[in-house]
Image (cartoon, rainbow over all chains, first blue to last red; front, side, top):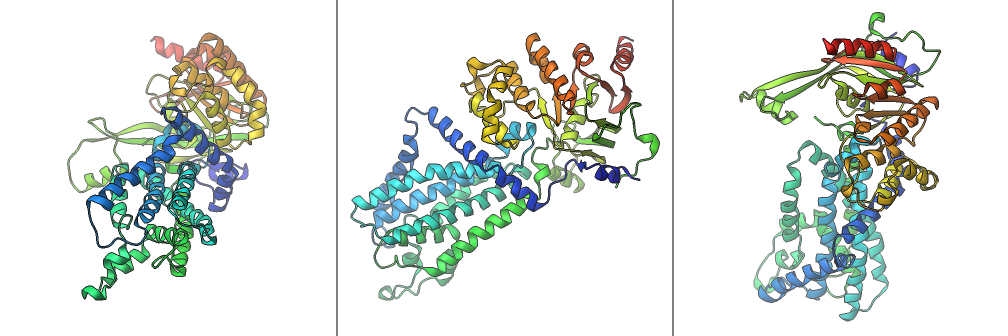
Length: 293
Length: 262
């Protein structure tokens, strides 16, 4: 009898192997309290280190919106500015902020927690999920600010506003998937974390936060401009653009802010698809994360 | 699958029908290291194959180690610096891949080494809660044993400070207290007691005996022969990556001391 058979008979598992995907996911689910507590504790400790504390969660996107509003709304004129430009900009900046924060934090979640990973035995997937959850919890108060801002600016609330609940849930799932993929890749290739700021900036400038892709590249008969169908097609497939467009059409009224069922389907496909792929992709290297070589 | 012949398997004389918990089967560990000191990554190895010249040296840290650990064993691991003790422990936890051979374990063990705090920006209290949750305990279970953990660590006064403010001894105390609440399991202590003071060392040695009595298995890497004599029921002596001796503590420690005094 071989040792491997001996071991199996005695109920011993090969070290360095990973549990089957199903068992792994249920182990992660059992640790949902860990994910939530870690997110909460980290927010507290981050706030304790700043004198303005929790206030920063709201202050940062406000300052961002102010800076971009000044630059893109005042200094640089543009002919691709949509209706309700200020609201358009605020929604874009606030929602994008969560994406860029979650992506950066999720990507570093394994490499930054080496001591934890190397001492205790637990499914590593909880770390990227906790990082995204933390950013999501910080994102929620900014949503409140955003809604108050819309009210003050004379956008009456209506029942479409409720659409942001499922939308932000999908957005959360999407970011979890992205964080899982990035967390594993940055374990194999540390340099990735240095590229992330550039990637988020690239997304920021191409996604249509301070200009409308549809108005810039759509057909404009009065100028004899046929538009750029390829750019529009790419934008339609780009998930952040979809999430922004859906959020704006849920919260704002007017031409260009109608219900877009095609984007809803795309957003659902992106979120569920990326989360499923990310889970599988992250699990594939489970035994790799604590390694010191 | 590794085929092991009978003479390879090290069976201690008296197992008293105890259940094997860890089987280490002819384990080899090799590191590829650049002569400049940088450890080679997979990407680097590919570059080398393409012909760029960099001095790559293979360090053979473990050369065919085999033994079986049973429940209620507390195994002292001794050897000179660089003999492969820590590599063996990391391989048992799965943090270092084996190049040949295999290790089988009944559960994923916790490894306590000297060094970094778990989450350095969070307080000791938060570290206990999160560490417990990560190991799979529920909040109620953690609450029930929280006072014990804090009392055992003996750092009540500093429990609400962030761990980055802790000394290495305090960090080791907290980590040991946390990892050792998990009874009926495998605990690996790699020199972590060395930074503790005498009182803490006595207390943690008592805890190790307790874990052993509760059908747990403990590996203790130490240079303190006294701690090993006080806590271990069995000692493994490693030298240059091979297992020199495996047996009764007094016997192995005497042989080891003799070879050191030469």
